[in-house]
Amino acid sequence: MVSTVKKLTLEEFLQHSETEPASEFMDGQVSQKPMPEGEHSRLQWKICEAVNQVAEPQKIACAFPELRCTFGGASVVPDVAVFRWERIPRTNAGRVANRFNFHPDWSTEILSPDQSQTKVLGNLLHCSEQGTELGWLLDPAEESILIVFADQRVQLLSGDRSLPVLNGIPLSLTATQVFNWLSL
Image 1: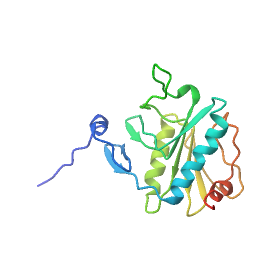
Image 2: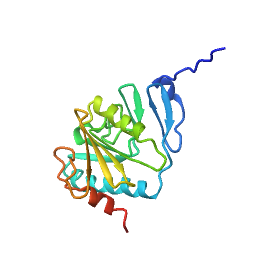
Image 3: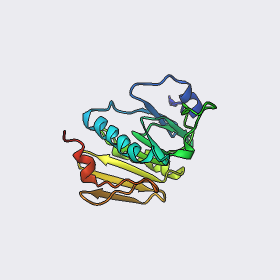
Image 4: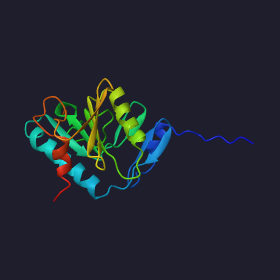
């Protein structure tokens, strides 16, 4: 007897209640993100803070932690999603909308222990295919950052080499500076 597994549709996935931690939908498959731990949470918060300190006052862009983004047949929750100011969806009252049904301009993922680097890189490549300009994959254990560019070219950076950021954001960082945020 052959058993078949019914693949879920995106619409069916979006009907389900949110999970904690968040679940993502890609290629008909649902996977739950790992529960964030100390290093992950600290890096996520500091990246949002660094971007928002320089980009938000000038209305260039805004960084959002753990924001569900549904686009291109998938629904992902990047650790940090940065949107250019003019692309942030708003309600009629001018407030930030709850649903972001398009790709981020810059997507950042922070690798957690026991998390598949291939799956996380797959999410960043999907974002890139759909129009995301820049992706970062931080590996705290290796103190390295894999950069995914819009053309899906990748580059591995560590140490004191400058990290690329979204065009127009006046932010200068190195991998050393990012991982130094883990020291209190």
